[in-house]
Length: 275
Image (cartoon, rainbow, N blue to C red; front, top):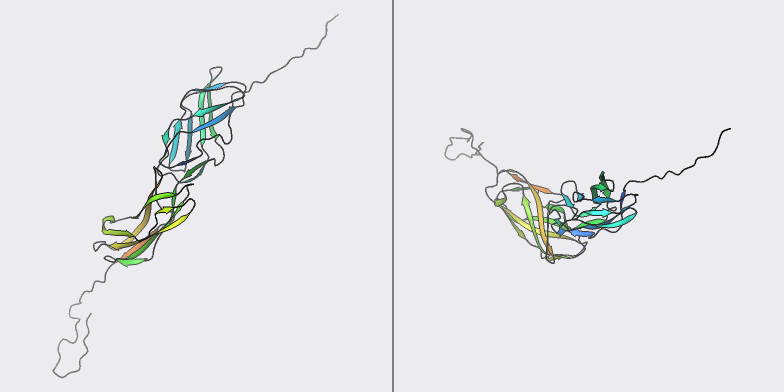
């Protein structure tokens, strides 16, 4: 006879390391262009194996032109089914990065508990959880579309918004001319000394044009400096720019033999013409 029986068993599925961001753990979540900043955040390993992240792990965000990137400060072991705090090295926020809300990303690099290389890219750090605050130059406007070399008292205005959560003081605004900068004189005529949080102000100027500026268009843009306490802020480039067109002066030339009449007699009523 034969022997019959049932064979049963259990298969355990082991998940590799998988990292997720712990919402609202990013610190600081507000910073400014030009400020040296070290970010910390918490990641959760929801996998069944631990992973050790090395210092090639990065934290970054970009506005499409300017990019902040920082590297993990120390090797950090992410135990399975646990949370760990990550600290990234101090680095300066790009001076020309646009103010606004950002979603940073972490690219994680390391070794898992079996010694296998571990990569997990584009771990999103919240949704718009980081705020870069500062000044935004909304527009520059010139009242004279056409003008001439040597003209003065041309009115130009620059409109600026403070997107920071604090008042910005010690404001210096400058008009930028695309050509012949040394031939233009600009004088601020407003008395604005500060811009409150989330407020907009319009700065006023008169400009004078040197006698030697040749005919043609001149593009107008602007820059602004300001302070929040000891922190210096800088922004260059208006969202909406303007221009002025330098016209040529009339250049009259006498056509030879066009003066008529060339001979007259005493007592005649005469009407003269010239080309």
